[in-house]
Length: 163
Image (cartoon, rainbow, N blue to C red; front, side):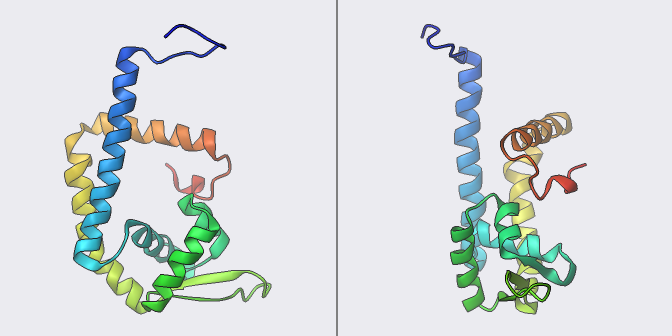
């Protein structure tokens, strides 16, 4: 294609890399989700919610902050958390600080499920991604994705956990 309206088209190598990234990421996330669904009837998003809560003091987080940390819409996280609450994995309550916000808290049952599911998830992450790349390539991937995150979501709530 020719340059039009200032568009900088991808060259053939860039296009091939971009398509490999899109297909690879889709397959990776689908496989990680399927592994958790098969073993624990738990989606990848539900697993990530359990992880985020487990890392917080008192295993609690405001719903808005939880949605932001996952880069998901608040309504999507609200629906997911509602399902998780029915399963006894989390509870929701009003914020003790101001009584306005809703706080999501990981239950002992949710923590136990996370402890059981984590090895399966980590095995998948290693098997499907980490162990396929050199340490340098994997570190480069992290740097690139941090740059993408920084560009797209300035002030993202998880920026403080980056090395």
